[in-house]
Image 1 (cartoon, one colour):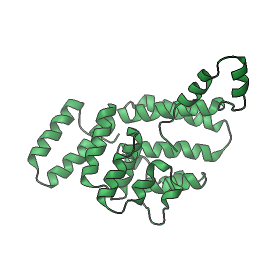
Image 2 (cartoon, rainbow, N blue to C red; image 1 turned 180 degrees about the vertical axis):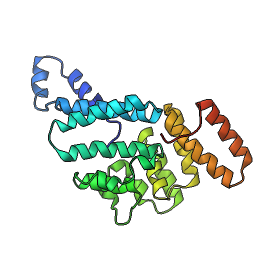
Image 3 (cartoon, rainbow, N blue to C red; image 1 turned 45 degrees about the vertical axis):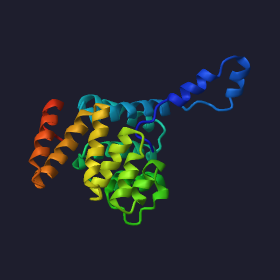
Image 4 (cartoon, one colour; image 1 turned 135 degrees about the vertical axis):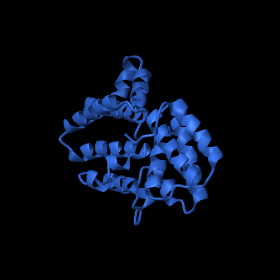
Length: 231
């Protein structure tokens, strides 16, 4: 399950089918149904708007995604969308917004159940092979060095933030993992996520008595536009 899937693959396939003969050949691979295209686009917009703090837009995006998958009458797809919501809230450290991912994913299949367990932070018995490939190395890592390497190996910024949030929930996030999350949120202009992770970093620096770091982080919070918040 990827949180930022787009229709790029579909567009490329259509563009490559030029000419009657080629179009006929491409007919053997039908495009995805409209509901799937709509759901992917809505979830992509949801992730972006939710992590930027555009709550009203994010709510509408999520409603569009749920409406699209509901048209199939398949509860597992609705569970998948709701788990995507949980993942994005984890990425912004808003754990209260989805306190029980396992319950959220109950109507899904084996993949949804594994992903829900990953998001819940209760990793006992969780087999990395049951997860989306993006997160397997994160769960399989045995020490902080391996976890940091696994996080840096995730290309997609939102997925990297989700992994950092899941590790935080599992109390397995190394201190430098906060900086990885901060960089991902900053590079993507994801203000809400950035403020949440800067707030977490500030609290950690304050507990460590690192006044220089606290001052630097507070300056970044001021530039980003407000007090760190998870809502």
